[in-house]
Amino acid sequence: MIDIDAHQVPAADRTHLLPGISIPEQVELAGLASGFDTLALLAAYRGKENPAYDEDTLRVRTPSGGLHVWYRNADASTRYRCSTGSGRNTALAWQVDVRADGGYIVAPGTRTPQGVYRAEGATRYPAVIPEWLASELRRTGHVIEPQPPKAAVGGGSATGLSAAGTDAIRSPRKRAAAADQVIDPLIAQVAECASASEGMGFSEKLNRAAYTAGGLVGAGHLEYAAIRERLVRVAHYARPWQQSRNEKIVDDALAVGFVRPLHLKGRP
Image (tube, rainbow, N blue to C red; front, side, top):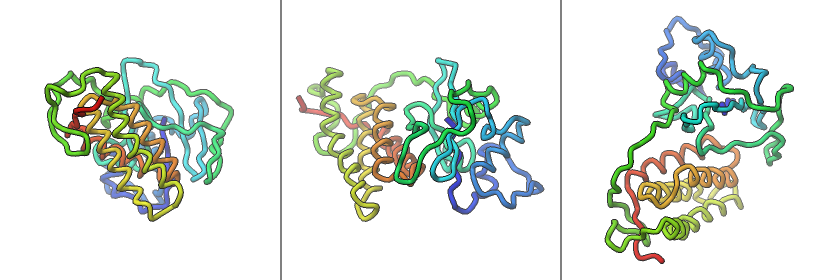
């Protein structure tokens, strides 16, 4: 899904509006203010229809004034990663997020404290993603390349966690259960932040939960897509008005934690 944002924030520098595409100084960017503008610019550069006006697929207007453009991936062998429009490494366009493998999508008709997600136009089913847009996702690093299995590396420091040893938990079922015992209390702390809009240490708690989860993923105790979706879901529950920021915290902390595997030891 293409998530077009319309946040009221200063526009990024022209060198960061369309990752990988140099926008000449001669191109007038006055008035550019949202993801609607950068997506239109990308489509214009490629000579293609702007997805925001694609009436052949499901489009959903968000309470914040953004737009979700839903597409199906018809190629089962290709997986796409999520990203935010302000991402440092992977991004399609400024203020244009990508919701894909393991991502969190709000269904049309959903009611939130901020408003209702309403389907726009007559189409109610996602169309297959256009070839040009699939190519852009590949160009901008959204395709998840298969990774060969590699040996776990010891590291990390958290209660109940230690470097791998001869008594490390080996049963997949027991590993998952033990990992849940570690991550569940941290996720519960994030959920508790929903009781107040500020002053709860939300970012720190979400970062700690995602970092720990990343370490457990790196050690093979948790599955990445499942725990990422769970973290994003609870983050959006606690702070629904900052979804892009929530996902950035989750993705960054997961990535850092992943390279510091946390091996469970001595748990039943």
